[in-house]
Every structure is written in structure tokens, then in C-alpha cells.
Image (tube, rainbow, N blue to C red; front, side, top):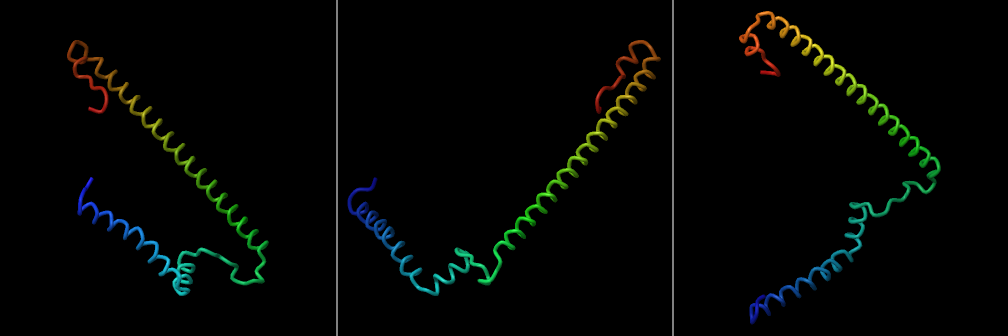
Length: 126
């Protein structure tokens, strides 16, 4: 904590900032042009483009659009599931082929007999 003149100057500076920011924001955003720009830019209020617009029809169109999106997401999820299942099946198939070739290699090396065949067997990838 700063004491003395330096602490007083720091507190005066902070107090000035605390007052300056809200007052300058109030003065800036009190201008109608700035309010109109901010409302248009940030789209605070959305009114129908035409007062004669049928809101019920627009609501039905939005519901139809949401249903279509939901259907598309369902179809996409089904496609992903099919891809996942086919990838799983191919992994299982390749592992079965690897294990069968490994078993055939073991049978071929087992015929040599003796200690040499047991030490030269390889397991795994290496």
C-alpha cells in the first residue's frame, strides 16, 4: 500500500477514471446518431421488415427449417455410425488375418525343432 503524496495521487487518479468513464459514455451515447448506429450495428431490436408480414407463416417456415436441419443431422449421424461400423469391421478382419498369418508362421518355425526355433520367434510388430 502506498502512503503519502504518491498514494494520494494514485487514489485521485483512480477516482478520476471511475468518474470519467461513465460520464463520457453517457455523453457519447446520448447522441441520436450514435444510438441509431449502435442499435443497427448490434441489432438490439428486430422488427418485422413489413408491418403486413404474416408472423404465423414466418413461424411455420422457421419450424419447417428446424425440422429439415434436424433430419439432416439425423442422416449425418447415421452415416457416421455406418462409417464407424465399417471401420470396426475392417479392423477386426485385418486383426484376424494378422493372427492367422502369425499362427501359420509359428507352425512353420515349430517344425525346425530345438532351441533355435523358440528363440527366433517374433511376437508383435517387431
